[in-house]
Length: 331
Length: 303
Image (cartoon, rainbow over all chains, first blue to last red; front, side, top):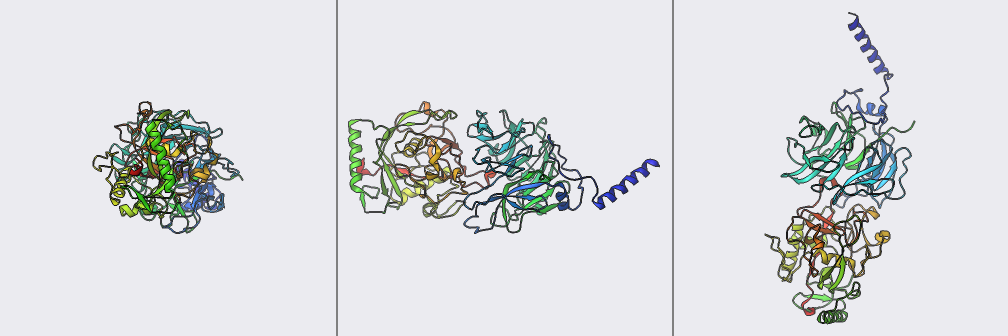
Protein backbone atom coordinates (compact mmCIF):
# COMPACT_ATOMS: atom_id res chain seq x y z
CA UNK A 1 0.00 0.00 0.00
CA UNK A 2 1.53 3.25 -1.15
CA UNK A 3 0.53 5.24 1.93
CA UNK A 4 2.09 2.75 4.32
CA UNK A 5 5.25 2.56 2.19
CA UNK A 6 5.47 6.33 2.24
CA UNK A 7 5.13 6.43 5.99
CA UNK A 8 7.86 3.86 6.43
CA UNK A 9 10.08 5.83 4.10
CA UNK A 10 9.49 9.01 6.08
CA UNK A 11 10.20 7.16 9.33
CA UNK A 12 13.47 5.80 7.99
CA UNK A 13 14.48 9.20 6.68
CA UNK A 14 13.67 10.72 10.04
CA UNK A 15 15.75 8.14 11.87
CA UNK A 16 18.68 8.71 9.57
CA UNK A 17 18.41 12.44 9.97
CA UNK A 18 18.21 12.12 13.76
CA UNK A 19 21.19 9.84 13.94
CA UNK A 20 23.28 12.16 11.81
CA UNK A 21 22.22 15.26 13.74
CA UNK A 22 21.00 16.79 10.51
CA UNK A 23 17.33 16.97 11.53
CA UNK A 24 15.30 20.08 12.01
CA UNK A 25 16.99 22.61 14.23
CA UNK A 26 16.02 22.45 17.88
CA UNK A 27 17.27 25.97 18.49
CA UNK A 28 14.77 27.78 20.63
CA UNK A 29 13.06 30.80 19.18
CA UNK A 30 11.58 33.26 21.64
CA UNK A 31 8.45 34.02 19.67
CA UNK A 32 5.65 36.18 20.95
CA UNK A 33 3.00 35.29 21.80
CA UNK A 34 4.45 32.09 23.16
CA UNK A 35 3.00 28.67 22.55
CA UNK A 36 3.83 25.94 25.01
CA UNK A 37 3.84 22.21 24.51
CA UNK A 38 4.92 20.79 27.85
CA UNK A 39 3.97 17.22 27.06
CA UNK A 40 5.34 17.05 23.54
CA UNK A 41 7.57 13.97 23.23
CA UNK A 42 11.28 14.24 23.77
CA UNK A 43 13.14 15.09 20.58
CA UNK A 44 16.43 13.64 21.75
CA UNK A 45 16.56 11.12 24.54
CA UNK A 46 19.66 12.70 26.02
CA UNK A 47 18.18 15.74 27.72
CA UNK A 48 21.48 17.53 28.08
CA UNK A 49 22.06 17.27 24.34
CA UNK A 50 18.54 18.42 23.62
CA UNK A 51 19.04 21.43 25.84
CA UNK A 52 22.38 22.16 24.21
CA UNK A 53 20.74 22.27 20.83
CA UNK A 54 18.04 24.65 22.03
CA UNK A 55 20.67 27.21 22.93
CA UNK A 56 18.64 28.27 25.94
CA UNK A 57 20.54 29.98 28.70
CA UNK A 58 19.62 30.57 32.30
CA UNK A 59 20.42 33.37 34.67
CA UNK A 60 21.06 31.93 38.09
CA UNK A 61 21.81 33.36 41.52
CA UNK A 62 23.97 31.08 43.57
CA UNK A 63 26.16 31.24 46.62
CA UNK A 64 29.60 30.79 45.15
CA UNK A 65 30.69 28.54 48.00
CA UNK A 66 29.00 26.70 50.81
CA UNK A 67 30.35 28.82 53.63
CA UNK A 68 29.37 27.94 57.17
CA UNK A 69 25.84 26.69 57.06
CA UNK A 70 25.22 27.61 60.70
CA UNK A 71 26.29 31.19 60.17
CA UNK A 72 24.67 31.53 56.81
CA UNK A 73 25.98 31.56 53.31
CA UNK A 74 27.97 34.26 51.59
CA UNK A 75 25.89 36.59 49.45
CA UNK A 76 24.71 35.34 46.11
CA UNK A 77 26.06 36.45 42.77
CA UNK A 78 24.48 36.26 39.34
CA UNK A 79 25.76 33.98 36.61
CA UNK A 80 24.62 33.05 33.15
CA UNK A 81 24.93 29.45 32.09
CA UNK A 82 23.84 27.39 29.12
CA UNK A 83 20.86 25.15 29.77
CA UNK A 84 23.17 22.18 29.28
CA UNK A 85 25.47 23.50 32.01
CA UNK A 86 28.11 24.87 29.66
CA UNK A 87 29.51 28.36 29.25
CA UNK A 88 29.24 29.55 32.82
CA UNK A 89 29.72 33.32 32.96
CA UNK A 90 29.80 35.49 36.05
CA UNK A 91 27.66 38.63 35.94
CA UNK A 92 28.24 40.07 39.40
CA UNK A 93 31.05 39.79 41.92
CA UNK A 94 29.92 41.66 44.99
CA UNK A 95 30.92 39.89 48.20
CA UNK A 96 29.01 42.39 50.34
CA UNK A 97 25.85 42.46 48.29
CA UNK A 98 23.26 39.88 47.49
CA UNK A 99 21.89 39.45 43.99
CA UNK A 100 19.00 37.05 43.68
CA UNK A 101 15.60 36.21 42.20
CA UNK A 102 16.15 37.00 38.51
CA UNK A 103 12.98 37.32 36.41
CA UNK A 104 13.02 37.39 32.62
CA UNK A 105 10.58 39.61 30.72
CA UNK A 106 8.07 37.86 28.46
CA UNK A 107 9.80 39.14 25.33
CA UNK A 108 13.16 37.89 26.60
CA UNK A 109 14.86 41.27 26.29
CA UNK A 110 15.28 42.02 29.99
CA UNK A 111 15.51 40.46 33.34
CA UNK A 112 15.17 41.98 36.74
CA UNK A 113 16.76 40.78 39.92
CA UNK A 114 16.31 41.31 43.64
CA UNK A 115 12.55 41.12 43.23
CA UNK A 116 12.44 43.82 40.59
CA UNK A 117 15.01 46.20 41.99
CA UNK A 118 17.46 46.12 39.08
CA UNK A 119 17.19 45.69 35.33
CA UNK A 120 19.52 43.79 32.99
CA UNK A 121 19.64 43.65 29.19
CA UNK A 122 19.66 39.95 28.30
CA UNK A 123 21.62 40.51 25.09
CA UNK A 124 24.40 42.72 26.41
CA UNK A 125 24.06 41.61 30.06
CA UNK A 126 24.49 45.25 31.12
CA UNK A 127 23.01 46.04 34.51
CA UNK A 128 21.12 49.26 35.12
CA UNK A 129 23.13 51.84 37.02
CA UNK A 130 20.30 52.77 39.34
CA UNK A 131 17.73 50.58 41.03
CA UNK A 132 14.30 50.70 39.45
CA UNK A 133 12.43 49.47 42.57
CA UNK A 134 9.93 47.67 40.40
CA UNK A 135 7.83 44.61 41.14
CA UNK A 136 8.32 40.93 40.84
CA UNK A 137 6.14 39.71 37.96
CA UNK A 138 6.24 41.14 34.44
CA UNK A 139 3.31 42.40 32.42
CA UNK A 140 2.82 40.81 28.96
CA UNK A 141 4.16 43.90 27.16
CA UNK A 142 7.44 43.65 29.09
CA UNK A 143 7.14 47.32 30.01
CA UNK A 144 5.83 47.11 33.55
CA UNK A 145 5.87 44.87 36.55
CA UNK A 146 3.18 44.02 39.03
CA UNK A 147 3.37 43.26 42.71
CA UNK A 148 1.07 43.41 45.68
CA UNK A 149 1.79 46.40 47.84
CA UNK A 150 0.24 46.83 51.24
CA UNK A 151 -2.95 48.24 49.76
CA UNK A 152 -3.27 46.27 46.58
CA UNK A 153 -1.87 45.44 43.17
CA UNK A 154 0.56 48.02 41.86
CA UNK A 155 2.05 48.34 38.39
CA UNK A 156 5.47 49.91 38.01
CA UNK A 157 6.86 51.27 34.74
CA UNK A 158 10.39 49.91 34.44
CA UNK A 159 11.59 52.96 32.52
CA UNK A 160 10.21 55.73 34.66
CA UNK A 161 9.57 53.99 37.97
CA UNK A 162 6.08 55.47 37.96
CA UNK A 163 3.64 53.47 40.03
CA UNK A 164 -0.03 53.00 39.41
CA UNK A 165 -2.67 53.58 42.01
CA UNK A 166 -3.19 50.37 43.98
CA UNK A 167 -5.96 48.06 42.86
CA UNK A 168 -7.60 46.87 46.07
CA UNK A 169 -7.36 43.21 46.95
CA UNK A 170 -9.38 41.29 49.53
CA UNK A 171 -6.19 40.50 51.39
CA UNK A 172 -2.52 41.02 50.77
CA UNK A 173 -1.00 38.27 48.65
CA UNK A 174 2.41 37.32 47.31
CA UNK A 175 1.93 37.76 43.57
CA UNK A 176 4.16 35.33 41.77
CA UNK A 177 2.97 35.65 38.19
CA UNK A 178 0.69 37.40 35.73
CA UNK A 179 -0.99 35.52 32.89
CA UNK A 180 0.12 36.22 29.34
CA UNK A 181 -3.15 38.01 28.59
CA UNK A 182 -2.61 40.26 31.59
CA UNK A 183 -5.93 39.24 33.09
CA UNK A 184 -5.01 37.03 36.02
CA UNK A 185 -2.55 37.10 38.85
CA UNK A 186 -1.58 33.96 40.64
CA UNK A 187 -0.11 33.74 44.08
CA UNK A 188 0.39 31.76 47.19
CA UNK A 189 -1.56 32.81 50.20
CA UNK A 190 -1.49 31.93 53.85
CA UNK A 191 -4.34 31.23 56.17
CA UNK A 192 -6.95 31.27 53.43
CA UNK A 193 -10.11 29.26 53.93
CA UNK A 194 -8.51 27.15 56.58
CA UNK A 195 -5.41 26.19 54.63
CA UNK A 196 -1.87 26.94 55.67
CA UNK A 197 -0.55 27.73 52.20
CA UNK A 198 -2.62 27.54 49.06
CA UNK A 199 -2.25 28.54 45.45
CA UNK A 200 -5.05 30.79 44.24
CA UNK A 201 -5.72 33.46 41.65
CA UNK A 202 -7.74 36.56 41.02
CA UNK A 203 -8.41 39.11 38.27
CA UNK A 204 -5.49 41.46 37.78
CA UNK A 205 -8.00 44.31 37.68
CA UNK A 206 -9.26 43.46 41.13
CA UNK A 207 -12.05 41.25 42.38
CA UNK A 208 -12.58 38.15 44.39
CA UNK A 209 -9.84 35.69 45.15
CA UNK A 210 -10.69 32.44 43.41
CA UNK A 211 -9.79 29.27 45.18
CA UNK A 212 -7.92 26.70 43.15
CA UNK A 213 -8.37 23.10 44.28
CA UNK A 214 -5.60 21.86 46.50
CA UNK A 215 -3.28 19.08 45.50
CA UNK A 216 -4.67 15.83 46.94
CA UNK A 217 -1.40 15.18 48.71
CA UNK A 218 -2.11 18.02 51.12
CA UNK A 219 0.56 20.09 52.77
CA UNK A 220 1.75 23.53 51.82
CA UNK A 221 1.48 24.66 48.22
CA UNK A 222 3.55 27.50 46.90
CA UNK A 223 5.56 29.09 44.09
CA UNK A 224 2.98 28.88 41.30
CA UNK A 225 4.23 29.86 37.86
CA UNK A 226 2.27 30.16 34.62
CA UNK A 227 3.70 28.63 31.50
CA UNK A 228 4.58 31.54 29.21
CA UNK A 229 1.28 31.09 27.31
CA UNK A 230 -0.59 30.76 30.64
CA UNK A 231 -2.30 27.58 29.48
CA UNK A 232 -0.49 25.64 32.20
CA UNK A 233 0.92 26.21 35.62
CA UNK A 234 3.46 24.46 37.74
CA UNK A 235 3.89 24.74 41.46
CA UNK A 236 5.36 23.15 44.54
CA UNK A 237 2.56 20.90 45.72
CA UNK A 238 3.41 19.71 49.18
CA UNK A 239 6.99 18.98 48.25
CA UNK A 240 6.50 17.71 44.69
CA UNK A 241 6.55 19.57 41.39
CA UNK A 242 3.06 19.49 39.93
CA UNK A 243 1.67 20.63 36.58
CA UNK A 244 -1.95 21.37 35.73
CA UNK A 245 -3.93 23.27 33.12
CA UNK A 246 -4.94 26.82 33.88
CA UNK A 247 -8.28 27.88 32.46
CA UNK A 248 -10.07 30.68 34.27
CA UNK A 249 -13.22 29.95 32.28
CA UNK A 250 -13.64 26.77 34.28
CA UNK A 251 -15.33 27.12 37.66
CA UNK A 252 -12.20 26.18 39.56
CA UNK A 253 -9.72 27.60 37.08
CA UNK A 254 -8.52 24.15 36.07
CA UNK A 255 -9.86 20.87 34.77
CA UNK A 256 -8.66 19.16 37.91
CA UNK A 257 -6.09 16.94 36.23
CA UNK A 258 -2.67 17.13 37.85
CA UNK A 259 0.60 15.62 36.72
CA UNK A 260 2.87 15.19 39.72
CA UNK A 261 6.52 14.72 38.91
CA UNK A 262 8.22 12.26 41.22
CA UNK A 263 9.86 13.81 44.28
CA UNK A 264 12.23 10.87 44.60
CA UNK A 265 13.79 11.92 41.29
CA UNK A 266 13.42 15.66 41.47
CA UNK A 267 14.14 16.15 45.15
CA UNK A 268 12.11 17.87 47.83
CA UNK A 269 10.28 21.15 47.28
CA UNK A 270 11.02 21.84 43.63
CA UNK A 271 9.74 25.30 42.77
CA UNK A 272 9.74 25.50 39.01
CA UNK A 273 10.32 28.07 36.29
CA UNK A 274 9.07 27.21 32.82
CA UNK A 275 11.17 27.55 29.73
CA UNK A 276 9.71 29.80 27.05
CA UNK A 277 8.32 26.91 25.01
CA UNK A 278 7.08 25.09 28.07
CA UNK A 279 8.97 21.85 27.53
CA UNK A 280 11.29 22.25 30.48
CA UNK A 281 11.10 23.42 34.04
CA UNK A 282 14.12 24.62 36.01
CA UNK A 283 14.19 23.99 39.74
CA UNK A 284 16.50 23.53 42.71
CA UNK A 285 16.89 19.99 43.93
CA UNK A 286 16.72 19.94 47.70
CA UNK A 287 17.73 16.52 48.95
CA UNK A 288 16.33 16.91 52.43
CA UNK A 289 13.11 18.46 53.46
CA UNK A 290 13.32 21.99 54.72
CA UNK A 291 17.09 22.14 54.92
CA UNK A 292 19.16 24.79 53.26
CA UNK A 293 22.34 23.47 54.85
CA UNK A 294 23.09 21.09 52.09
CA UNK A 295 24.14 21.38 48.50
CA UNK A 296 21.09 22.28 46.43
CA UNK A 297 21.95 21.99 42.76
CA UNK A 298 20.09 23.71 39.95
CA UNK A 299 18.36 21.17 37.74
CA UNK A 300 16.09 21.02 34.71
CA UNK A 301 13.31 18.53 34.18
CA UNK A 302 11.73 17.70 30.84
CA UNK A 303 8.03 17.67 31.61
CA UNK A 304 7.08 15.03 29.05
CA UNK A 305 9.17 12.21 30.47
CA UNK A 306 10.55 13.49 33.77
CA UNK A 307 14.16 13.29 32.58
CA UNK A 308 16.40 15.59 34.62
CA UNK A 309 19.84 17.11 34.35
CA UNK A 310 21.94 19.04 36.86
CA UNK A 311 23.51 22.16 35.45
CA UNK A 312 25.05 24.03 38.40
CA UNK A 313 28.67 23.46 39.32
CA UNK A 314 29.25 20.98 42.17
CA UNK A 315 29.07 22.35 45.69
CA UNK A 316 27.08 25.44 44.91
CA UNK A 317 24.01 26.31 46.84
CA UNK A 318 20.88 27.46 45.14
CA UNK A 319 17.56 28.68 46.47
CA UNK A 320 13.96 28.56 45.40
CA UNK A 321 13.40 30.51 42.22
CA UNK A 322 16.87 31.96 41.98
CA UNK A 323 16.89 31.15 38.30
CA UNK A 324 15.09 31.98 35.10
CA UNK A 325 15.41 31.24 31.42
CA UNK A 326 17.08 33.45 28.84
CA UNK A 327 16.92 33.36 25.05
CA UNK A 328 19.82 31.83 23.15
CA UNK A 329 22.76 34.17 22.79
CA UNK A 330 23.21 36.02 19.53
CA UNK A 331 25.21 34.01 17.07
CA UNK B 1 26.89 52.57 73.75
CA UNK B 2 27.01 53.73 77.35
CA UNK B 3 28.43 51.67 80.16
CA UNK B 4 26.17 50.42 82.91
CA UNK B 5 26.35 52.50 86.05
CA UNK B 6 24.92 52.27 89.53
CA UNK B 7 21.16 51.88 89.83
CA UNK B 8 19.71 55.05 91.26
CA UNK B 9 16.04 54.99 91.52
CA UNK B 10 12.67 53.54 91.87
CA UNK B 11 10.96 50.23 91.51
CA UNK B 12 12.55 49.50 88.20
CA UNK B 13 16.18 49.28 89.06
CA UNK B 14 17.44 51.41 86.21
CA UNK B 15 20.95 52.67 86.16
CA UNK B 16 21.82 55.89 84.48
CA UNK B 17 24.70 57.08 82.42
CA UNK B 18 24.31 60.75 83.22
CA UNK B 19 22.37 61.08 86.42
CA UNK B 20 22.52 64.81 86.76
CA UNK B 21 21.42 65.46 83.23
CA UNK B 22 18.67 62.95 83.71
CA UNK B 23 17.43 64.70 86.82
CA UNK B 24 17.48 67.99 84.99
CA UNK B 25 15.53 66.61 82.09
CA UNK B 26 13.04 65.05 84.46
CA UNK B 27 12.66 68.34 86.25
CA UNK B 28 12.20 70.08 82.95
CA UNK B 29 9.51 67.62 82.02
CA UNK B 30 7.73 68.06 85.34
CA UNK B 31 7.91 71.79 85.00
CA UNK B 32 6.48 71.66 81.52
CA UNK B 33 3.78 69.23 82.52
CA UNK B 34 2.75 71.23 85.55
CA UNK B 35 2.38 74.43 83.60
CA UNK B 36 0.46 72.67 80.88
CA UNK B 37 2.67 73.88 78.08
CA UNK B 38 3.03 71.89 74.96
CA UNK B 39 6.49 70.98 73.85
CA UNK B 40 6.81 71.84 70.18
CA UNK B 41 8.25 69.29 67.79
CA UNK B 42 11.91 69.01 68.39
CA UNK B 43 11.72 70.69 71.76
CA UNK B 44 12.57 67.41 73.45
CA UNK B 45 15.72 67.06 71.41
CA UNK B 46 18.67 66.59 73.70
CA UNK B 47 16.52 65.50 76.61
CA UNK B 48 16.63 61.85 75.73
CA UNK B 49 18.80 59.88 78.12
CA UNK B 50 20.13 56.37 78.09
CA UNK B 51 19.32 54.05 80.97
CA UNK B 52 20.30 50.50 81.66
CA UNK B 53 17.65 48.21 83.07
CA UNK B 54 18.23 45.76 85.90
CA UNK B 55 18.29 43.10 83.21
CA UNK B 56 21.13 44.88 81.45
CA UNK B 57 19.21 46.24 78.46
CA UNK B 58 19.87 49.77 77.35
CA UNK B 59 16.82 51.96 77.01
CA UNK B 60 16.35 55.60 76.16
CA UNK B 61 14.07 57.69 78.30
CA UNK B 62 12.07 60.03 76.12
CA UNK B 63 10.24 63.11 77.36
CA UNK B 64 6.62 63.52 76.48
CA UNK B 65 5.63 65.84 73.70
CA UNK B 66 3.41 66.75 70.81
CA UNK B 67 4.23 65.86 67.27
CA UNK B 68 2.56 65.52 63.91
CA UNK B 69 1.96 61.85 63.30
CA UNK B 70 1.60 60.64 59.73
CA UNK B 71 2.55 62.38 56.53
CA UNK B 72 1.15 63.90 53.40
CA UNK B 73 2.76 61.23 51.20
CA UNK B 74 0.50 61.15 48.18
CA UNK B 75 0.18 57.41 47.68
CA UNK B 76 -0.44 56.52 51.31
CA UNK B 77 -4.03 56.90 52.39
CA UNK B 78 -3.40 55.65 55.91
CA UNK B 79 -0.93 58.34 56.97
CA UNK B 80 -3.28 61.28 57.43
CA UNK B 81 -1.26 63.84 59.39
CA UNK B 82 -2.66 64.68 62.81
CA UNK B 83 -1.33 66.08 66.08
CA UNK B 84 -0.64 63.64 68.85
CA UNK B 85 0.65 63.95 72.38
CA UNK B 86 2.78 61.13 73.75
CA UNK B 87 3.50 60.79 77.46
CA UNK B 88 7.07 60.16 78.62
CA UNK B 89 8.29 56.61 78.18
CA UNK B 90 11.42 54.53 77.87
CA UNK B 91 12.22 52.57 74.74
CA UNK B 92 14.88 49.99 73.99
CA UNK B 93 17.84 51.61 72.37
CA UNK B 94 18.18 48.69 69.97
CA UNK B 95 15.95 45.98 68.65
CA UNK B 96 15.75 43.02 71.02
CA UNK B 97 18.73 40.86 70.26
CA UNK B 98 18.73 37.11 69.84
CA UNK B 99 20.92 36.77 72.89
CA UNK B 100 18.47 38.73 75.01
CA UNK B 101 15.46 36.95 73.59
CA UNK B 102 16.93 33.53 74.20
CA UNK B 103 17.95 34.50 77.74
CA UNK B 104 14.32 35.22 78.62
CA UNK B 105 12.51 32.70 76.47
CA UNK B 106 14.92 29.78 76.35
CA UNK B 107 14.71 29.55 72.58
CA UNK B 108 15.71 31.49 69.52
CA UNK B 109 13.40 31.24 66.53
CA UNK B 110 15.57 33.44 64.31
CA UNK B 111 16.66 32.24 60.94
CA UNK B 112 19.96 34.07 60.91
CA UNK B 113 21.53 33.00 64.17
CA UNK B 114 23.87 35.47 65.86
CA UNK B 115 23.83 36.78 69.40
CA UNK B 116 23.94 40.48 68.61
CA UNK B 117 21.56 40.28 65.70
CA UNK B 118 17.93 41.19 66.22
CA UNK B 119 15.59 38.39 67.13
CA UNK B 120 13.54 37.69 64.01
CA UNK B 121 10.82 35.42 62.78
CA UNK B 122 9.02 36.73 65.82
CA UNK B 123 5.24 36.61 65.90
CA UNK B 124 3.36 39.36 67.67
CA UNK B 125 2.33 36.79 70.24
CA UNK B 126 5.98 35.83 70.77
CA UNK B 127 6.92 39.46 71.26
CA UNK B 128 4.36 40.12 73.97
CA UNK B 129 5.25 36.87 75.72
CA UNK B 130 8.83 38.10 75.80
CA UNK B 131 7.65 41.41 77.26
CA UNK B 132 5.98 39.57 80.11
CA UNK B 133 8.99 37.35 80.69
CA UNK B 134 11.27 40.35 80.81
CA UNK B 135 8.92 42.06 83.24
CA UNK B 136 8.80 39.05 85.53
CA UNK B 137 12.55 38.69 85.51
CA UNK B 138 12.84 42.16 86.98
CA UNK B 139 10.01 41.81 89.47
CA UNK B 140 7.68 44.04 87.49
CA UNK B 141 4.01 43.57 86.77
CA UNK B 142 3.34 42.01 83.39
CA UNK B 143 1.46 44.16 80.91
CA UNK B 144 -0.13 41.41 78.84
CA UNK B 145 -2.84 38.92 79.53
CA UNK B 146 -1.66 36.11 77.29
CA UNK B 147 -5.14 34.62 77.03
CA UNK B 148 -6.84 37.75 75.75
CA UNK B 149 -3.80 39.68 74.49
CA UNK B 150 -5.12 42.69 76.38
CA UNK B 151 -2.46 45.17 77.45
CA UNK B 152 -2.51 46.78 80.87
CA UNK B 153 -0.96 50.18 80.23
CA UNK B 154 -0.89 50.89 83.96
CA UNK B 155 1.40 47.97 84.68
CA UNK B 156 5.02 48.86 85.31
CA UNK B 157 6.41 46.09 83.13
CA UNK B 158 7.50 46.01 79.52
CA UNK B 159 5.24 46.11 76.50
CA UNK B 160 5.34 46.83 72.81
CA UNK B 161 5.25 50.50 71.83
CA UNK B 162 2.03 52.01 70.67
CA UNK B 163 2.19 53.10 67.08
CA UNK B 164 2.30 56.72 68.24
CA UNK B 165 5.15 56.03 70.63
CA UNK B 166 7.08 54.25 67.92
CA UNK B 167 6.73 57.09 65.42
CA UNK B 168 7.46 59.71 68.06
CA UNK B 169 10.65 57.88 68.99
CA UNK B 170 11.60 57.38 65.36
CA UNK B 171 11.08 60.99 64.41
CA UNK B 172 13.11 62.16 67.41
CA UNK B 173 11.76 65.65 67.08
CA UNK B 174 12.08 65.81 63.32
CA UNK B 175 9.23 66.54 60.94
CA UNK B 176 10.70 65.26 57.68
CA UNK B 177 10.00 61.82 56.15
CA UNK B 178 13.32 60.58 57.47
CA UNK B 179 14.93 61.69 60.70
CA UNK B 180 17.87 62.93 58.63
CA UNK B 181 15.96 64.80 55.94
CA UNK B 182 13.42 64.82 53.18
CA UNK B 183 15.05 62.28 50.88
CA UNK B 184 16.54 58.84 51.53
CA UNK B 185 19.94 59.96 50.25
CA UNK B 186 21.57 59.26 53.63
CA UNK B 187 19.57 56.16 54.43
CA UNK B 188 22.61 53.95 53.98
CA UNK B 189 24.16 55.57 57.04
CA UNK B 190 21.18 54.80 59.25
CA UNK B 191 19.67 51.58 58.05
CA UNK B 192 20.20 48.07 56.80
CA UNK B 193 17.80 47.95 53.90
CA UNK B 194 17.67 47.51 50.17
CA UNK B 195 20.03 50.37 49.53
CA UNK B 196 22.78 48.21 51.01
CA UNK B 197 21.69 45.08 49.10
CA UNK B 198 22.19 43.32 52.37
CA UNK B 199 21.38 39.65 52.54
CA UNK B 200 19.98 39.39 56.03
CA UNK B 201 19.58 41.28 59.29
CA UNK B 202 22.76 42.63 60.79
CA UNK B 203 23.98 43.13 64.34
CA UNK B 204 22.09 45.86 66.12
CA UNK B 205 23.64 49.25 66.73
CA UNK B 206 26.09 49.28 63.84
CA UNK B 207 24.52 52.11 61.90
CA UNK B 208 24.18 55.71 62.94
CA UNK B 209 21.51 56.29 65.61
CA UNK B 210 18.69 58.78 65.24
CA UNK B 211 18.92 62.13 67.06
CA UNK B 212 17.64 60.54 70.26
CA UNK B 213 20.20 57.77 70.20
CA UNK B 214 17.94 54.99 68.94
CA UNK B 215 19.47 52.48 66.56
CA UNK B 216 17.95 50.68 63.61
CA UNK B 217 14.62 52.45 63.70
CA UNK B 218 14.75 52.15 59.93
CA UNK B 219 15.47 48.77 58.42
CA UNK B 220 17.14 45.69 59.89
CA UNK B 221 13.85 44.10 61.06
CA UNK B 222 10.27 45.29 61.07
CA UNK B 223 9.14 46.12 64.58
CA UNK B 224 5.83 45.04 66.03
CA UNK B 225 3.73 47.68 67.70
CA UNK B 226 1.05 46.99 70.25
CA UNK B 227 -1.72 48.60 68.18
CA UNK B 228 -4.20 46.92 65.94
CA UNK B 229 -4.08 48.35 62.46
CA UNK B 230 -6.80 50.63 61.16
CA UNK B 231 -6.40 52.28 57.79
CA UNK B 232 -8.67 55.17 58.75
CA UNK B 233 -7.78 55.20 62.41
CA UNK B 234 -5.82 58.44 62.25
CA UNK B 235 -8.99 60.34 61.38
CA UNK B 236 -10.61 59.44 64.67
CA UNK B 237 -7.80 58.62 67.07
CA UNK B 238 -7.58 60.50 70.36
CA UNK B 239 -5.05 63.29 70.60
CA UNK B 240 -3.34 62.02 73.71
CA UNK B 241 -1.64 58.67 73.84
CA UNK B 242 -3.61 56.91 71.10
CA UNK B 243 -3.56 53.16 71.48
CA UNK B 244 -4.99 51.96 68.20
CA UNK B 245 -8.41 50.64 67.22
CA UNK B 246 -10.27 48.56 69.77
CA UNK B 247 -11.01 45.85 67.24
CA UNK B 248 -9.23 44.25 64.36
CA UNK B 249 -7.12 41.21 63.80
CA UNK B 250 -4.00 42.65 62.28
CA UNK B 251 -1.27 44.45 64.17
CA UNK B 252 1.01 47.24 63.13
CA UNK B 253 4.59 46.83 61.94
CA UNK B 254 6.92 49.80 61.62
CA UNK B 255 10.31 50.80 60.32
CA UNK B 256 10.89 48.49 57.38
CA UNK B 257 13.46 45.75 57.29
CA UNK B 258 16.67 44.75 55.58
CA UNK B 259 14.69 43.84 52.49
CA UNK B 260 12.68 47.07 52.31
CA UNK B 261 13.02 49.78 49.70
CA UNK B 262 13.70 53.33 50.87
CA UNK B 263 10.11 54.52 50.54
CA UNK B 264 9.12 51.97 53.14
CA UNK B 265 11.86 52.90 55.61
CA UNK B 266 10.16 56.16 56.53
CA UNK B 267 9.17 57.45 59.94
CA UNK B 268 5.46 57.35 59.14
CA UNK B 269 5.18 54.23 56.98
CA UNK B 270 2.67 51.75 58.32
CA UNK B 271 2.33 48.07 57.62
CA UNK B 272 -0.22 45.66 58.99
CA UNK B 273 0.18 41.97 59.47
CA UNK B 274 -1.47 38.96 60.96
CA UNK B 275 -0.20 38.56 64.52
CA UNK B 276 0.76 34.98 63.72
CA UNK B 277 2.95 36.08 60.85
CA UNK B 278 6.59 35.20 60.79
CA UNK B 279 7.32 34.84 57.10
CA UNK B 280 5.84 33.62 53.86
CA UNK B 281 7.11 30.78 51.78
CA UNK B 282 7.35 32.90 48.64
CA UNK B 283 10.02 34.86 50.40
CA UNK B 284 11.76 31.68 51.41
CA UNK B 285 15.11 33.25 50.90
CA UNK B 286 14.07 36.46 52.52
CA UNK B 287 12.42 35.57 55.75
CA UNK B 288 13.83 36.88 58.98
CA UNK B 289 11.88 40.09 58.55
CA UNK B 290 10.16 40.74 61.81
CA UNK B 291 11.41 41.62 65.28
CA UNK B 292 10.57 44.20 67.91
CA UNK B 293 11.72 46.42 70.72
CA UNK B 294 10.09 47.17 74.06
CA UNK B 295 8.91 50.22 75.93
CA UNK B 296 8.00 50.87 79.54
CA UNK B 297 6.90 53.68 81.77
CA UNK B 298 9.71 55.99 82.89
CA UNK B 299 11.35 55.38 86.28
CA UNK B 300 9.09 56.28 89.18
CA UNK B 301 11.34 59.03 90.44
CA UNK B 302 10.55 61.03 87.34
CA UNK B 303 6.81 60.75 87.30
